[in-house]
Length: 218
Ligand SMILES: [Fe+2]
Ligand SMILES: [Fe+2]
Image (cartoon, rainbow, N blue to C red; front, side):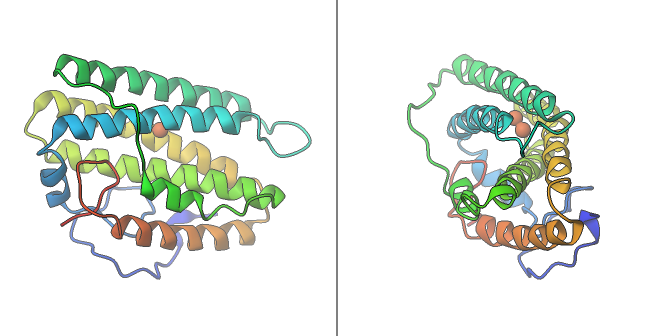
């Protein structure tokens, strides 16, 4: 499947520079970065929780392989992603600590919850395909947001963090996507990916503003 040749059915706001090699259908404007960077500790706290959840998600996927045995590189991919996410979590929590902040105990992410609501639960490989696509989309969106943050951040320490994470999350996006691509016939995968890309664009565009990685724009 060539994800870059899909036609977009979503006419969302598009006033930011698209990040190369990402198939997203709604692009984050620079003013989003200006808004969320006004509360850097809150943004870092949300970010830390997202890294923790990303690590947990990779470990959960590790033993959800399609029957009968794990596909080539399945276990290695999920293990490597979980390890990366734990390292990102350590980086972000260190910054929170150094800046005098504290990680909150509770966290919610309505964007990710809405995406997970699209998973066709209990439907065999369709369920797994959707989980991998949702994971790929969250990584792709994180990658795009890190790029926007890096470009618009006057705080050099944070800009360096975001520049450093960009490539890692891009790699995770591709890894989840490649495993999804192998699960079902190509036409079925392409059709579902097209639906998922439109859904992700609608969901991210509908989020309320606030100092979080997946917030909307006011
Ligand atoms: Fe990460
Ligand atoms: Fe990631």
